[in-house]
Length: 335
Image 1 (spheres, rainbow, N blue to C red):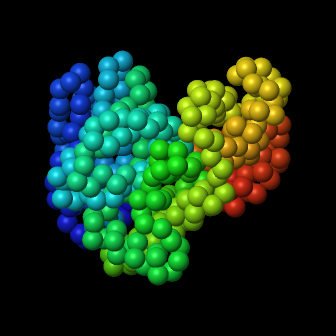
Image 2 (tube, rainbow, N blue to C red):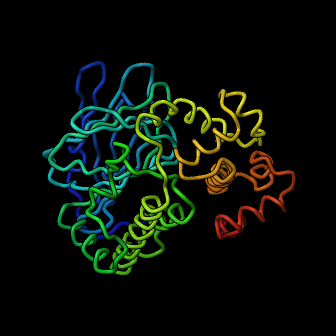
Image 3 (cartoon, rainbow, N blue to C red):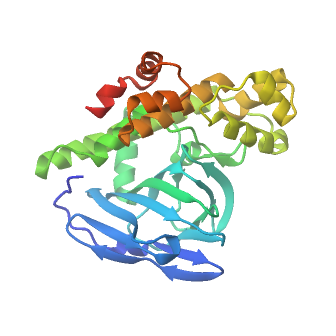
């Protein structure tokens, strides 16, 4: 990623601390003109995170944490001056997020959320024995306010920010599966083709585009998502989460076999899943498979192998489905 000429300060590395076995640890860090590299033997050998300056008031933090069988958490310092709002994307693993050091909301790989942790400590409790890959965009208060006011003027957003972040009806954060348009924008931000002032302008435009697409997805969620009553969400949550695990696999199980696995009728299962996720079972499965395929292709795996792993009988049928959903063919993603 090409860096801007803006100077980074080490306060980025002081925004977070690690909690393990009721003890607290600081990140070690190295800083150069491009980035701040975070290190911690607790979360894996070598570099476990990198913070880049995008432009004034905006930074991007890539995390790659490995946990063992002990409880491990990353806690945000509520007095840190550099962060007010964070847009968080989880690419692998599971974390339990909460405010005021109370983890209450589970997010799985592929999902995202807004962290409004200003003036209050937030906690990311990491799942045990796992590899957590994440990417967060951190905004200072003044910078995010400027962005949000422009989004309000353009009628991209129509509610206070808190309404977009947290749904009081179901007492949970608004979240959705990070889709192809967002993944493409993130990839463009990480791989800017420019330098100098042109890079600054390019990245500022991409951050705007990221926020527009993100809040457009939340608008659709708020408009179309039909929630089950709170008491029924908790009642069916375990089964719905198990169903998601099944659907995250590339094979194509029948609805009949799935319903038997989770102990629900096909009709009830489909209705509850649509209410729980906002998507049909078939839609969720297809999108998850193709998003996983996109990540494999970006990791330079052969297209033929990706098609086979994704459950397609031929490269041609895979490429057709991939282009319809992603908007680019597999070979165009690699170009």
